[in-house]
Amino acid sequence: MAKRIMIQGTMSAAGKSLLVAGLCRIFKQDGYRVAPFKSQNMALNSFITGEGLEMGRAQVMQAEAAGIAPSVFMNPILLKPTNDTGSQVIVNGEVVGNMSAREYFAYKKKLIPDILAACRKLEEQADIIVIEGAGSPAEINLKENDIVNMGLAELLDAPVFIVGDIDRGGVFAQLLGTQLLLEERERARVKGFIINKFRGDLSILTPGIEMLEEKGGIPVVGVVPYMQISLEDEDSLTTRFAAPTAQGEGLIDIAVIRFPRIANFTDFSVFEQFGDVSLRYVDSVEKLGNPDMILLPGSKNTMEDLKWMRQNGLEAAIKKRRNDIPIFGICGGYQMLGERIEDPHGVEYGGVIRGMELLPVKTTLMEQKTRSQVTGEILCGALAGMELAGYEIHMGKSERTASCAALCRITDRMTGEVKEDGAVCGTVCGTYVHGIFDYGTIAGKLIEFLAARKGIAWNEQDGADYAGFKEQQYDLLADTLREYLDMKAVYRVLETQSEN
Image 1: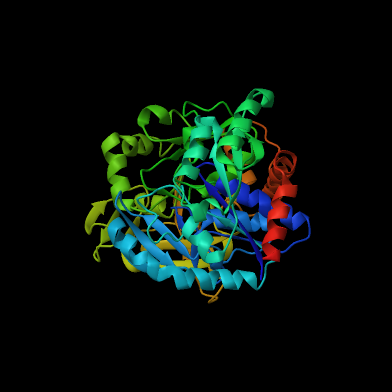
Image 2: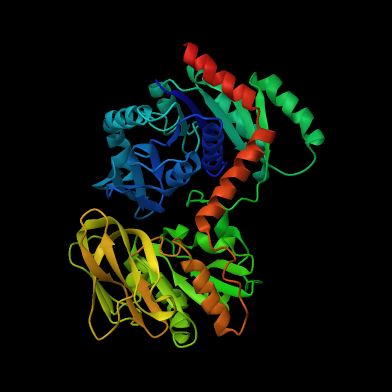
């Protein structure tokens, strides 16, 4: 049986995902077969596996850190919010349906067999499973039938480390308060506290640590510094959206429209590796400025997000720039750029809405979700002839309604089906392929093209290897944790577990 260790947090965005990724990389470096696991993930950033199944991107990032292919068993339950009170429920990579929060709360206990089966599958390939909790284990209104925090720890008999975010303040109250609200049998599972995102003089913090250990009766096994690492995080509270949104300081300025239901904004993380590129997420005309390129990301509610853009003036501001700068939409953003979106099956709210009318494309929202990994070639524009790879994940079918070039030709890796995808009309482009910029040197060539339009010389070798860049980031994360986390204590917990 694989050894298990679990990272829980005092709140969302305390740093659980990165700590799990870092531990996965450390265990891999130390010669173990390791796999990440999160029973239930609520996120709009998702991924399609080679089997055509859907899972959260955070576990994909952790699988990369572990050096293994992502599997839906790492995230058997994915909740994709459709509004403030409901989500699309995905189990083992397949859509079960849409549920309100109340409906899912009553339903989730039925998913325990799926969680246990997924974990057993991981045990077949891993020596160590690093488990991530969600939110906080001290949400007492959610503790009944818990399947992601202490309830999961009990199901899997996993020891727990609790991480708190000192950068937001109140970390001692966070950690002690969390412990106080746990039941006695749950407190017995907690083997240590981790203070995360620390900036400053550790000697000043030491008296607080001593008092924390005295009052809590649990050791602090690490004080991890605030890390400047570029890796994917959970989308709900990403710090990327908190970055300054004024006109960027980079030689190339790219603006991403931040929809209320923005999805898969990880499509643009590749641009963060370029030192002279400013990648900004904007939600108003005032913040848009005069970028060199505008990106429209995916959306979990395309029609409502299009209405939001129409109401706050962003649609008009973008359309004014249609002849001046490249405008590129992916998935929901691609659908918005078309002439109209029809929803005959009530996938979102039903009815028909006029699109931005920048591409001669009509979209019909379908009841069945398209899920596939694809390879292909870009057919036109500055990137013509370049190979691509990525994945499709969408509820719509889009058709070009007039003479207009397709952006690319793609092949479904499972079925072998070949088809044209996307559309290009002047400086406006759209596609359904997520991750299109991640592959090969596409991102670098695009930046080179944008620089040439401004008369700026660009070294195309800069940031050409995104996969290599991410490997460097995983190693940097592991090196930092080895320095500031008591790995001997972590291994002692694993060894003690194996003796039991």
